[in-house]
Image (cartoon, rainbow, N blue to C red; front, side):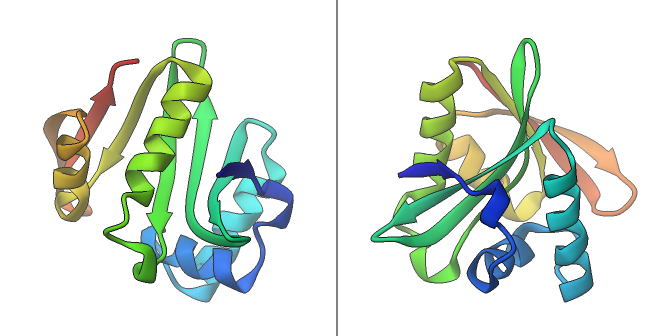
Length: 136
């Protein structure tokens, strides 16, 4: 189930899952990420919950013509269970808009596999990144 947990995102379980995807996955970096989401009314933070346990998270922003995903991550023990795909499907079903995001080499294959169009671009931090787009 895809539910809003923005007010409850500062739990150890959620912070651990954020750390997998955050640029700075240190405790200080995760704390900063949590603070950014909780202080911004424009940012949404949802979780994929099964049996009362958060196993995936998604931070995103709603624009007039698209949804911009800033952060998506799945708990390591839940990987391979299609949780990431379920999160993307929930976003598509809820908003029926184009979904956009940027990612790195390690994750681009996942997005391509679930139907995103990808375009590589140079990035000074990662050498290269990918702009990913999924039509509604």
